[in-house]
Length: 80
Length: 439
Image (cartoon, rainbow over all chains, first blue to last red; front, side, top):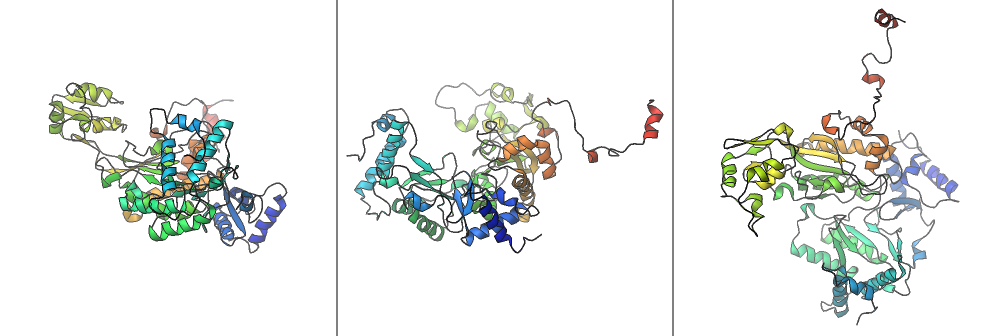
């Protein structure tokens, strides 16, 4: 199965809905948006959105989270 | 004179072991003198400030680092770990102190020239401090500023043909022993397999795909020089199917003292004459060896690959010729359920570069598919196996259970069959049953 045409909007809607409580998400959280798709398809799509500059990775070093670019604590807050 | 007073760090230098404090002081001095005329791109006193913040952490009994960040290089979701100091005014040299993971060559084969080039990049663009092949296994560059990351990445990839390693929820930098390139015990070419899988799984290395970290390590034989059984979620250990090769003449040469046992490792003291009974046969954990007259015999089906006899008498005993590897899964450090060693999943897998190691990649991908689907956030494979059961993993990988998967006698007396495992399923012919069993 292919992702729906409005997949990007679905991801952004999901992030928007949760934005009051979270600014960063685990990759697995995005699986729930596309329950019929395999994890690899969703991973590739999320990575594409990171490549397009819509989302960004945040890494603790041991695990990785994904958020809307510019949302939550940013590099600027670290004196950059 | 040192930029910061560090009495607590200084005290660490007084112990019997080489001290990282001495190393840091040396690097701080080298940077201050700069006899090589390096055009430092980050503060020259980065190492002094690092010692300062460490001293302060010891005084306060708490860390002054902030952990994690969005820093990285374009297109990669791993390889760089953000670190910031929470006392940037006091220690401006380490306001940013990001870690860069660098993939090492297979088998860690280096030329001095290559190492110098690595350090040329790092001394100019970073702190000059590294953690070479520590517990993570790869090359770790410790401490640089955000604006240097793309520069370092460009120079590593374009000038040194070297990639970043893995961090975060990615496949981590695969690591291997020297394998058959130099070691006669090796049952497969670890360098070739490690390099092949590193290239094949580039996407998994650089783009977060998993619930948490995932590590591959490759040992050419059960001696386990990279300790893959303890250090990797998926461990590939060389093994053999046929018999240990015995050169009876060489056995006698060991007994007669003509060849030193253990490669001559015990020669500093008077260890006495080599006693094959005491030093080899009686130490066999499965008691599968004995002497018949002047012949050494091995009951190969009992051998559990402890490697002791082969290590003790390498010129008399050699690994078999029908070689491949065993795959073990689930090793991890503590967090949940304590630390675990790997559990044997595939007792023998063919290693065939001709078909792109199809037998190996099939097992890897079936495990990944299951873990990506079923693993909880931040759940290691070993924890998923504990939660869902080893039996479930056998089911998803299509590997048939056998005695070698059993680690201990069962403690649960119940056997839960599935319908397709029972002849005839759940349907029964009641009339037939009643012929033999009255109401």
